[in-house]
Amino acid sequence: MFYDNAKFDIEAGKGGDGAISFRREKFIPKGGPDGGDGGKGGDIYFVATNDINILFDFRNKNTFKAQNGQSGSSKDKTGKGGDDLELKIPVGTVVETIDENGAQNRREFLIDGEKVLMARGGNGGWGNSHFATSIKQTPHWAKRGLEGQNYHIKLQLMLIADVGMVGFPNAGKSSLLDAISNARPKIASYEFTTTEPLLGVVERKNYRFIVADIPGIIEGAHTGKGLGIEFLKHISRNKVLLYILDGTKDNVAQEIKMLEGELKSFNPELLNKNRILIINKLDLMDAKSVLKLKKKLPDSMFISTLTRENVDNLLDKIATLLS
Image (cartoon, rainbow, N blue to C red):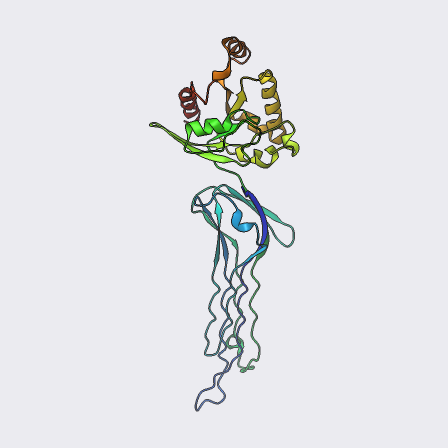
């Protein structure tokens, strides 16, 4: 299953309490205060990595806590600081933090290895040795450690790919991905064979780029129908969109309008991206149908993922748009 969102809480470590202690050694029965400070609580960091591509590790846990700092002890010994906690997230994750007052902050993690402090651990409390004065030489109090920062977290993963393939079910997106890349998607002649986004790497002598196969969109996808609403967000970072349509259908031009309508309703900026209109299944079309569609859609490319006709030309055009 493709996990691309998660909600949970994070709690940085509490600082250790300061110690109340007095020096007690041979020949010094009434020494001064020697209570040590508490250790600092552990911090929480988010680290972006290309080693993972889903948010599975965050699905079944409500809270992630860093270690508390240890309390101080006698002989002015400072308590050990709490261990920091590093939470690894896929590159492309959007992190939203919400504090106890409802204030929100949003950050995108787009670089492999990017490490950001998300919750700071509490400082350790002072031991009683800090509070001795000429008037009060034996203070019987110390300072408690401070609580660490805590936040409610919302994660949303948006895949990072150069090219996104969009189209209605059974138009041939998975077949095209299989033909041009190292991905091996499930392929069958029924709707919604693809139920989660798939990434493939296209490598040729002169270029390399990543393609995302977005599950089939249907009319009304932006409102939650079908699978589209779950995955439309994943094309927001694509530089080029491939509109893939089944050339054997009678209403290809109408499907283009429907597809553009769904993208516009979800995010109007998607229509401003570079696009290539692809008419697939050329091997099943007769010459008359091809000529008719070419007149109606002069800017489209006709391909066959089965015979690979014009597929190399398509890849060259994509590479030109990406350069």
